[in-house]
Each structure stands twice: as C-alpha cells, then as structure tokens.
Length: 185
Image 1 (spheres, rainbow, N blue to C red):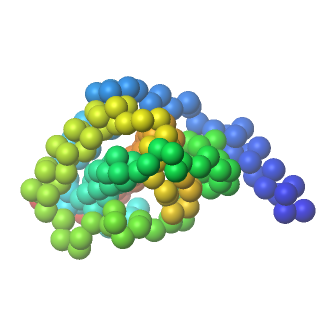
Image 2 (cartoon, helix red, strand yellow):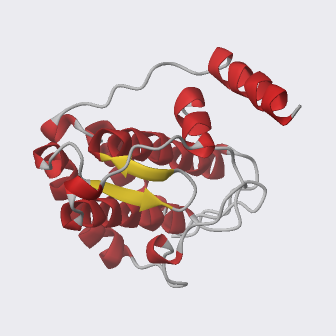
Image 3 (tube, rainbow, N blue to C red):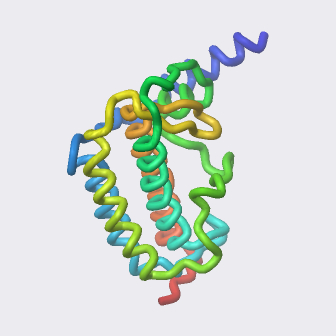
C-alpha cells in the first residue's frame, strides 16, 4: 500500500511539474537570480508576517549562504566518494522543480544571524557571484550531502540551487507584494 501511495504521489508531482529549469553554464549560472537578489537588497528590512516569519534580508542572506556553503562543501569533497543513491525527497524536488513552503528548516550552517546587516549582504553577494561562475570548473562528481535530499553531485547541486533560489525569491516577491507588507528602510 505504501508503495502505491508513493507511486501516485510521484506521478502527481511529475504531471504537475512546472516548466523545465535551465541551469546555464559558467557566468550564466544563477546570473538572473543573483541580479534579482541585488534588486531586493534595498528592501532587506521588509517583513510581512502573513507570508514569512522572517525579513527579506533573512531570505537574501540565507540564499547567499546556501550558494557559498554548497560550493565550499563541493570544492572540499572527494569525487571518488560520491555515491548516486535514490532519494525520495530529491526525486520529489527535482520532478516538481519546487520546494514546498513551510516544510523544512534551514540547517544551522546556512541560517543567518538574528541581525541582518546591509554590509554583510553586499559582501555575500560578491562572493556568491564569484563562486556561481566557477561551479562548472569543479569535477562532475564533486558533491555535498543535503540533510533531506542526500548526496548531490555538481549538476544536481546546480539544479538544487536553482530550485532553492527560486523558492526563496518567490517568498521575497510575496513579502513585498502581499497586502500589509511592512516596508521599513
């Protein structure tokens, strides 16, 4: 019975999957997303508790930390230790090209501090751009271990970063465009 339910859920997610994700190569990888992140920096103090418990700045810093930490983990990994294993969570995220809202908490390593500062965000965006442009220089089987999705090699990590970044950009858009957004600068 459990296998039947998993199969039905999988088919549902695959059939409802949004458009295909284009990963881009070299300087193109995450280029548009990082531009959009830069455009939201001015709104880093904005909060809308109807959408998210945390500010736009928290989401920006979390995104930039995620890009940086994933790159650093992959750079330090040993490609010979990569193991391609089936992971249900990874399959669901990759087949639907989305992460459900409110279902996960950020690992400590990519959780921003309580105080978000503009200077910190600006420094992190510079580093994230540099690392995103170099990701294709890493060997294919460099990897990092995601707490839920398991082992992700370079190309899976790129795909995850695209999906994860879009997930948080959607939240930021909603924070800024939903009624009762508290914009404070």
